[in-house]
Length: 385
Image 1 (cartoon, rainbow, N blue to C red):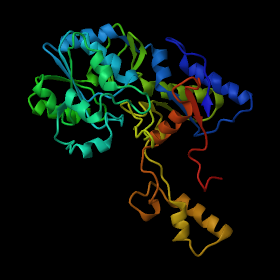
Image 2: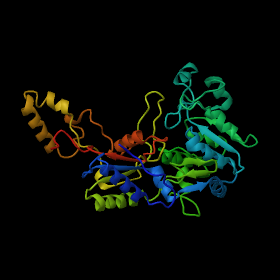
Image 3: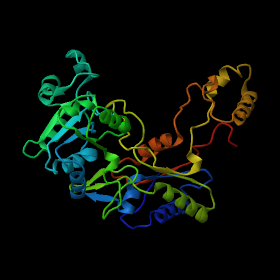
């Protein structure tokens, strides 16, 4: 369930606000807290509490120290919230800018063209590189994102100053070297491989977004992720991914125990890791689902497929005898039975990825005002007393 908090600003005691909100819920009879209940806190509210913001001008100044003759931006996501302000900072350097976009979608599934377009025009997405003019001939004079209604190619092009933005379409990052040997790697989950490939191909200067705004200064920074996981806060400011998430979750876990006498698990979560079946968007535009979590959330679920065991090993049993046998089987299973027939159909994903997706769907990203999610019964199973 979503837990509503006051509006959190820089310097507020976020942990105290979470504890107080849970105490109110208990006093109102909404729930009773137990050991192994989970408190999930959105990364955004932790970053706000930390004041982890950076001004656009600061990003531009750092880029100007790293790039001298041009900037090739490779594989950004299609997003006003996630990337447009970063691109504006790049453009403000005054250097020629080349943006290489992947097709038919970006890294997280936002469409630049229909998959059918590749077939109709006999395009090989592994090798073919084309210009903005060629893209328009194939995708249409205007291609609007199915959810946002934005033509991102036009949006990024129009952000240029004196027509200093060139758009290129390729799934090979080395294509940017035809335009510049100074590159900013903007993709998220495969950035290390992309950076390595560019350096091996002869790029002179290569940084990734996790290396920009990664060191302490007068404004916000993130030593692990830099600009990755950032969001538009205002027209002139970015909110960065939070720092010190591990420190926060252990501190909150202790305060919850001191207040309620229960050993709860705590995690910080960002985007969930799931794919939308209609828009085909993979939600995870943050570098990780959870930048910080307590030790009880490590690893993968240890589960058996009840129906498989019931239909095979215990096919001869019925009623209470079947129930008792199943409970004993669960208690004896030990660690996650990877590769065993009894685990067929269970989900081999990290607990934090599953919980982060659950929490992200509950809290949403709009006006619910529930940046904290309480999860109960997650670790219960058929054998739980």
